[in-house]
Length: 86
Image 1 (tube, rainbow, N blue to C red):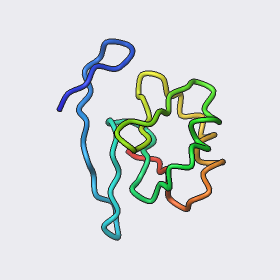
Image 2: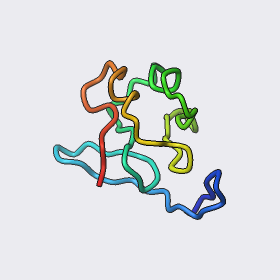
Image 3: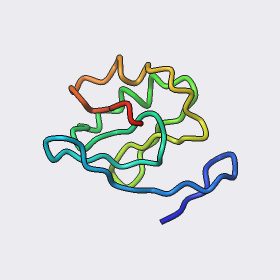
């Protein structure tokens, strides 16, 4: 499925599998929310760019807004709840 980000760019939404069988949902970018996420909302509250939002009972990071500051990583209470991707 293709989605349009806030800058009008097309992004492919996908599921990618990480080592150990974990998977993450998101758009191709520098950070992604994994299936380890407990949906506490700490990352959403901390993000200064408001790039993280809850969609379909999952948190997602908007590539058009994310500046890769890493604050979401710092506040996430779950190990590997948010990961840096290539």
